[in-house]
Length: 373
Image (cartoon, rainbow, N blue to C red; front, top):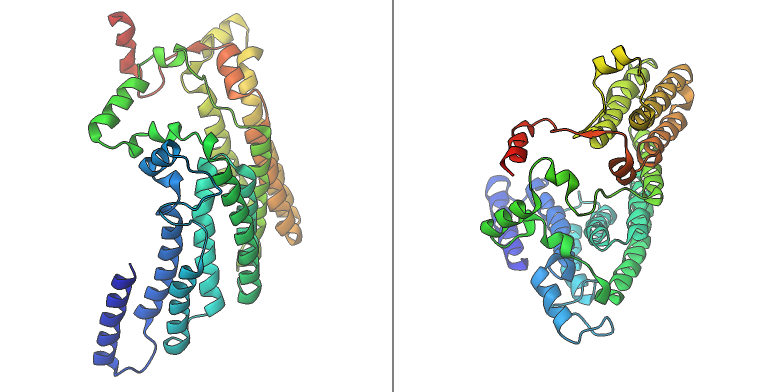
């Protein structure tokens, strides 16, 4: 990787000398240096962390390796050798490219490294480190105009990510990566991927009644944290973009209705109702005077609630435009809480809901499988 980088840089330097005689800024070389720092940061995690290499993970599990010993393929945390590579990039930028902001280059390197570790934390079910780093990224974005402050925040997040990495490796014996191996994109061959798909798809209605986990419901903890992240990042974005020129306060009503409430309510309702229809049809409700079926219609309460919250937030933002930086994040958090935390849970709904199984859209042809069996 270092050799390829040096070759590219030499070619770009030669072209620049031929065309401009060495004068002026070399935008291509600056872009190459910034890209190299980001790619190198990602490679330090993706190439050395066992969670991203199934064979490496299986081999480590088969030998007497523990977290007290170094990883055979190389450390995942940053070491002095990384200082040589990254320091060389900084030295070249400082000597030849004054247009590159060195603290910002360090921020980009650390953010990419920490983002790669976030992916590993998600794979290993370590949510608190994930949430802490993503919250911290928002603080980096807020301090982007002060590179030294942003660099200090990124350095603090590196300490958090390092603590998460150490905890993950110490818990190596309890890693469960079987769900990754079952995904077709992680299969070793196309045939294996097809076999896995055939194994997991039985057709309607057997996929709904097969003896397996009915549904993975989101925890209240995760729903709350994701909702807080939505509000936090809404606040960060509003602070970064500032007041929009020629923006009308009434536009917040349309924004919350068309871009927040409708998509969120539609996704929530479709996840619950996809393949689970009302026990009686619309006309059946009309003629039998059973206009409301509580056991089934309860699934619509959360979408209605989040739409009401979103519309109320849009109305408040339109009436009090000076408080938009606070109203919009609070509304986004409230919408997330309604979407993720209001019951019933998906598992409870599918096991006890007053519904009937029906072939969903794009599954109509699966009805013939019932007659075949």
